[in-house]
Image (cartoon, rainbow, N blue to C red; front, side, top):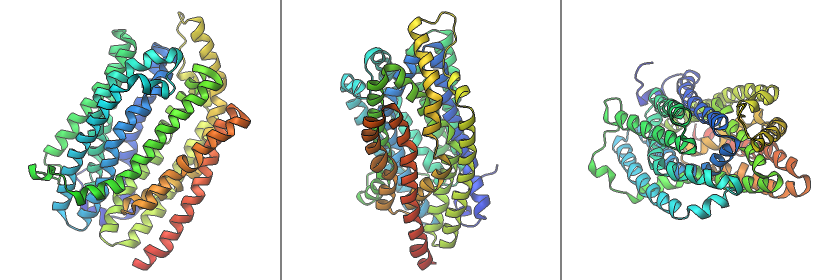
Length: 461
């Protein structure tokens, strides 16, 4: 695939352009998701199912700090896409410089706070009983690498905003492959246990940062920034903040969801039930990679054409993205409905020296995960509308509806459901909350997206 200039986002046929943007994004997300999935399989087989639960406890904290970088990245990238579409390259460069400064300032502060309150945060997120000690080991090591992850997440979205999806894909592949290789070395060969899993993850972040830095210093990037671009600008920070708040709010609600889920499930079934959710959580990250890839590919296409006032192309990109993403979501749905038992078994150890406690935990997980997985993914075929709809408002710089629609699924529906349904339906109420929240959020998003296309885009056309 040759070099792509940003102005091609406004000239190529939408279908071809979405494929060109979405395929590399999907491959990158696939490899990153496979990394998380295989990493979890390695941990489950070489350390144990309690270790899977421990990592699940740590993820919300480390991912929230990393999401600060993603929020700054996506918020700034929306500004960059529209600036490039309007031929305002100096504004694009200034925005990128501000993104770097803001990411470093915010994430390093958050890491310091995260380490200071470590003994309070881990139990609060469900790291209780046998889960606490392995979670603390993993958390401490991984947190040191999170600022580099935040810079990678920020830089990756900017690479896409420039119309360079192949480089963004490579940036996601490098840390994933590195992490898996180092997992084998540190956990299996060196027998470092949780320490090995954590150091492999942190080293993967550093590898990704190295590649991102290389890209922006090379001739491949159009955003050649200078020292004065790093000076924070109030106007640019307001734009980045307003749009980045959408992503940050999404991840904040996701972290709250993990906190509630881990604690509710620990009360219902102890460490083993948390392990069930940990496996399902990995599948939520992995299985939907093609849908997320189309969504990521859609963002720069919609943003650039909106900035260039080509509203018919914006509408076409919405319809085409929903069509592609819905098809992918349906394929994912079929696979998960047919093979949940085989998927669950991949995460569980069959070592001959397994302890009796571990054997009991594995038996519980194998018995309970498949049914739960089917309910969690029951509404998968319709989620494309929900994701593309929220992404559209973010891409075109409409921060308030983007924020509200992003919060609809987890904040307005899912969290209330998991607080209410388990009181009456026990464990089943937890799993039923997933498809009900997906259905309600899709209906709401569909209503507002249809209204936007019918009134705003048609009038402007």
